[in-house]
Length: 269
Length: 182
Figure (cartoon, rainbow over the protein chains, first blue to last red):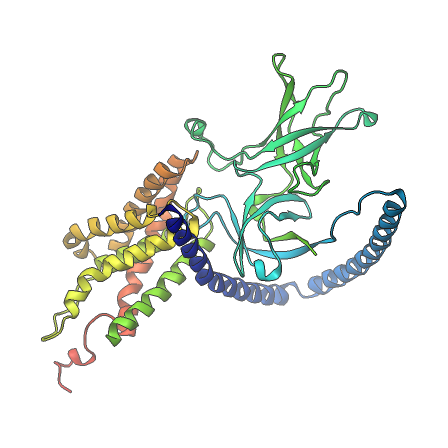
């Protein structure tokens, strides 16, 4: 009975998303077409100059990519010679456009993007921007997918922070989404500010300190997000409670979630 | 039968458009204008068409608004992954309540009726949703939802009679204006 209801709810969700997606996609494309046309008319020379600049940057990035391919091949050869396991499958980043944010009522904290399972998007895939980690794909429909951002309270990210002493290596912790909880709701008098993310379970090691505003990156230990993706920066000192063997800190996300237009999804080839 | 099919297709298109616009709309104070709810309310408050002799159309119209309300609610539930029936129940309840006070609402000009309905329905929806989903900004959303919904309601209620007339779904025969002479 419950299984049937769940299947029906899932079917309704897929149907609703499938019906709405073409309209959203069409509206976005029409909007892009009009805004690009208008910008083209008013920008004129500046647009041409910007286009040339981007072409040069594109050429440069092609060179960097070719270098990276060589390094990847060399790394694979060296791993083979050293007897290490292969570095897993080759992953690539696929661009996607953000169709909508926060659902239809604004109550849900998720993004809907215009790439789905037909384009190779799978549930659990990491979603990033050049600034840093956005979240993970929660559900992938045929032509669209739902992305849960790292600000959602349900998301946990295995992270690492560089310690003040470079020789000591990184310290590990778990990042928690900052979404509102019912307990905190009474204290919510700020209109729409995003509360910071919380870095917890950071182990205390004697003699080791963590600098203020240190970069927080993914550690890859959780198995969901690859290692080394920027997550954010500490907003201040780590809170060090004498009664606990762990430290806590607040993290400001690297990504501006209110102005997301394009994202990149990790796809394993 | 053909008219009912046209109505189903028409309302499906309207609900899909409303859902897409609602989802793409920017949030104001965390709330979005509840277009799906407003479409359902607009249909619930639409004056019944004049009875046609020997036609069962008026009877169909009596439950038509409920079907539209249920469909709009289910749409919102499905898009937002809300608990099953959460918005469907609220939309049907809101439409039923609106129909109870329909006489006074219909006395107002259409845009004003839409403004009032939007300004009342949106905060009620926020309050209802806050019972299901914890949100730290519930009070802010409650207040912020009203202006956008009132504006959207006024526009929707003003447009609805024209759209109904253009599509021929207002139930008035084309030759009614000239005394039914054909």
